Image (tube, rainbow, N blue to C red):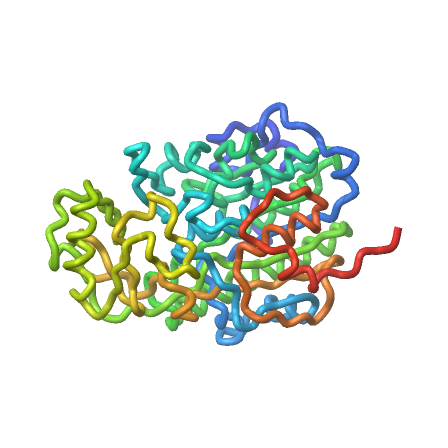
Length: 420
């Protein structure tokens, strides 16, 4: 990559968090070294290509991703994201193995009735506050069990969660590193001395999501973004091969994308919401009576959405138990943009996610995995993204807490364990 200045991670170890936003991931002062058991494990690189819909690879000729599937495992009909199919909840579900109602990050922005505070993923004050996050993310689990980890631009990686944070981190918001530099940083992290080298690295790339939202999932701009991130996977694969380490590469996405039909459906055009706290389409009632009144008035107001009391939501959504989800809950019937009240945007973005993945297959993301621990040429039927967590925990030899994922779902794609 001519003209690109790569800052070696050895020097990054001295960087402060603020400087890390300009150069690379900052190390956490005083972090333990890899344990003897940690030295014996495979390396796992978990990559999210945000907003990469399950059919993009074939539709836009993502040759490196298709080759990855041929050399390992792939899900041609997609991976089913957790509801709501939004970036921050879904990425955090992948690294915790929990549905959003259980890990608590129920949207990119939401209100907590108990705290009487708003969480916004784009606000460093809340995104870096570990008290908002439930579950035991893979990097925290690894660190507690003697395996160093790194987290580059993944929700929650700047926070101390379950008593730990990653040894190396880069904030999701505000990072100045280009995509190519992030790939370079993975390589440099894996060149560190073995005792300090992360065995688990999570990194996300937002370009496809950004292009599809602005221009639509069928646009030339989205096709170009797909080819861009596919080339990153090709470069990353070459870099990993050159290191001659035992590395498994797993590529996922948080969700897919749908082309929005029509304009906004503004809920307050059907019912007064002045006494409610609202964020996006989330509704937080001041009382049970107010919640029921709005539910009754909205449930037949518009064919574009359905309305439920939270405890009566369809079971497959796993979204009924957390007050942060609001009540009543609005579920779009199709690719329709819904909000509580009119805002600055006169028209919605051309592409959106957040929809029910069980009625809209466009919400399905991707799963590709290859490396020494994976069987070759395995084709998977669609499965839920919470099952990625126990898979990675097994590869790394981690003792995993109970999650919403099932280790049996993906265990068949792994090579048989060598006899002792």
